[in-house]
Length: 100
Image 1 (tube, rainbow, N blue to C red):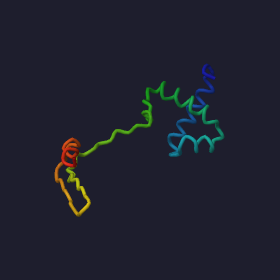
Image 2 (image 1 turned 60 degrees about the vertical axis):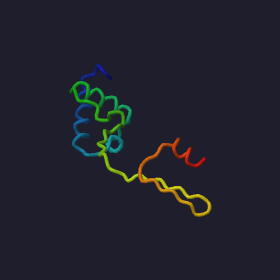
Image 3 (image 1 turned 180 degrees about the vertical axis):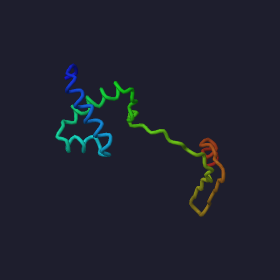
Image 4 (image 1 turned 90 degrees about the horizontal axis):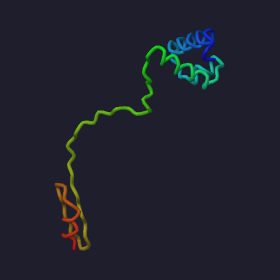
């Protein structure tokens, strides 16, 4: 398959059609009656020959996370109606000392 220029040209033309179709790879392969694995192989060859980076990137997407101010509070309720409210973060050691 790799050394046959006619097959290569035919598959590269199909890949160009795929890019214009707006379909997913699976949908395009079904529409064209092509085995997905065969299409994927030639699509990798096409990207390599045309120096096109893999758009999949392993399935990871870079997220931009904005730092937000969150009101951090802890409220503890004890038997007998005793309630302690902390409006700032406190360490677990501090809470442990306070409770004991």
